[in-house]
Length: 319
Image (cartoon, rainbow, N blue to C red; front, top):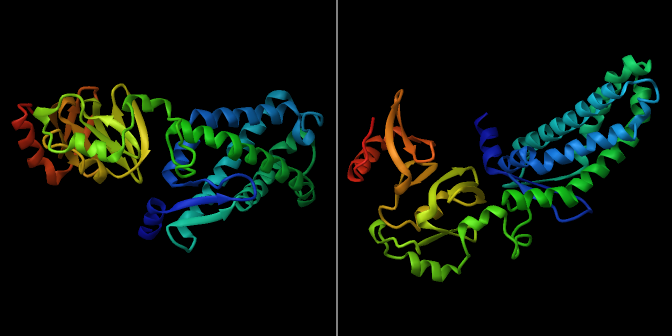
């Protein structure tokens, strides 16, 4: 089980075929995409189209409209669930290196075979057709072509939109170009690495004048606007100004640029700015930092004494 967990956390999946550039993503990225508004709207549109065109002819066979819509909701949700499960299993169990590659046809065909059986069985009470291999095999080729068409539209048009909206890096640096995610406005203009090194070198928390910056994945952030940074697998969730942005990166890259006394690291997955910490409280057997926006940040047990000492130096009282 430990090896499977390590594979899920450290490996990346690359899906490829003849259409478009193959996206490469981690499990964390995949879950972010599945929860994104862009993807959910597309899934809803697919349900509407399947019902509107009476796919497989179930309404013509006597199925009411509301039952038909529910059937396709279950169909789309089932396909996404099976598809995701197959990818997770592939990432965890497939031999190979850090990047695991698979043809899109593999999860598509397997998922559609399972979904076809599911849909036919759910339609039996309305169509009067018994569930049999003959019926499943009759519908299966058409369903595969239909699912592959919708999947290709997803990869060509929807996935790039989700990639941009979430600030991911599914296609390498080629797609970032001059256009940045909407949240990147918080970061301000991006400068070159040598310039940024000069701006941040030798500055302390008392000497910050609003011009000190740090760079993460090509985005420059004003240090006085950073609230906290949380590490999530290969990504950093950055709270800056009034927005959050998720970027590929390591917390160590951030810490290497931080001026002395600009903040603290209460946990190996967190960095918190000094000006956003409002207090400390005991929570069971551990401590949590209280931030100005109401967020509570865990304090690792091994760092409790160090964090309390730092807060005393900042004249912040604990509870």
